[in-house]
Image (cartoon, rainbow, N blue to C red; front, side, top):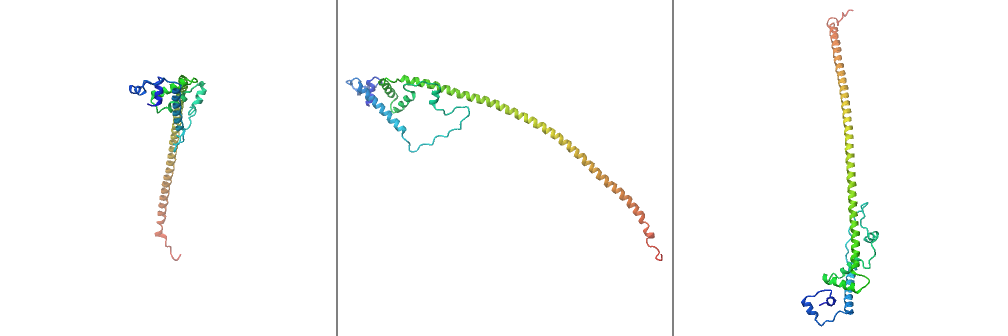
Length: 244
């Protein structure tokens, strides 16, 4: 049985099965300061080892995800510490994030053993309590809930404004359509008037051309008639007496 589990069992922080209690032995001495210190030392060592592994540079780090363009009026990506500071969250003797890092460092343990180890560390240190971390977490959760609600308010206001602006653009489009259609109707009426005037002028031109051709034909007929009458003299008198 791991020494840590033995120490936790001695402290009464975890319950062992029948086989585990048999392996512990009835003659085991009650926990003393050395057992507690050993437990805490192993817990701290495990936590430190996990934190060091997490902090070590990776051989191939994935590129950071692309950041979306900031949206005006919507606070995005604001540091959480800044949010807590703005909400005046008081400093905690043991912040919730520190407790979370501790739990992450003990992730290899069973949940019950991990909880018992944290309780043992709490009991061994009078400067903080698990209750401090839980209270800090509750305060910060309330801040985050208000921040999330504020985001919803921004979206609601933006959508309301977008609806108003969209309605205004629709009204603008309808007004422009009515004006342009009226202008088109006026232009069509003007075009019809112009086409009618052109048709009338063409008719006048065509009529003048026809009348001119008709006058020519009449005058030529008159002239031809006179020429025929005059040329009738040719056979009779075109060859005068040569003696004259």
